[in-house]
Image 1 (cartoon, rainbow, N blue to C red):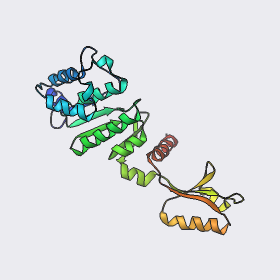
Image 2: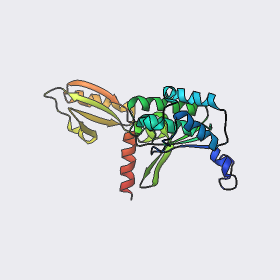
Image 3: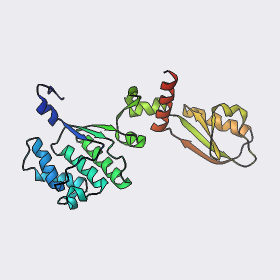
Image 4: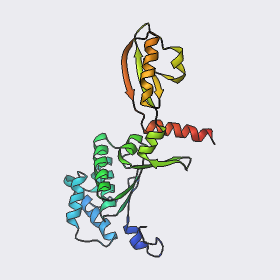
Length: 241
């Protein structure tokens, strides 16, 4: 772990790592501040109240600093878990579904804080089922199926090579999608999605609609996201199994 043998030099190796578990694990006998001081002591750190205050402020826990852990809501307890993982300033942080079951406000706050930590040089390993979260936060993504890695690449490359771009059209009453386009079309509510790979394909698609006498009520260009990538890769891995 960053040059420290995890067996021969396990104490220093552990100092390199901060872990936020998915389960809410806490000691019910202490306040938030006491919990963080105790956690600091596990790493031989004392008199670090300035750093504790900074963490509390960043996680919006300042007003709860002297509150017993039992009196906190589930979302607040999850914030304390994040604070515990950061109290010894580890260079590597593992977040195991940190926003599972939390409200939107807390999720956004954690996203901002995690992004800041990453910008400041921390390596952040995030496990999540929220694909929009992975797309927003991660520069490199691994996708797993049944414990097997089916994709490992930068977020940019995954989106560029696997996501599907499409032209969504809603036809006016009386207009029918021409048969020449049905092979690449997918029904989408009251409209159609016409898949394309290169932007140069857009004009021929529109020309085909004009040639068929179609009138459009609405037109949208849709960029695929990580959910599209995930579905495609899972289907491919299933087909090859």
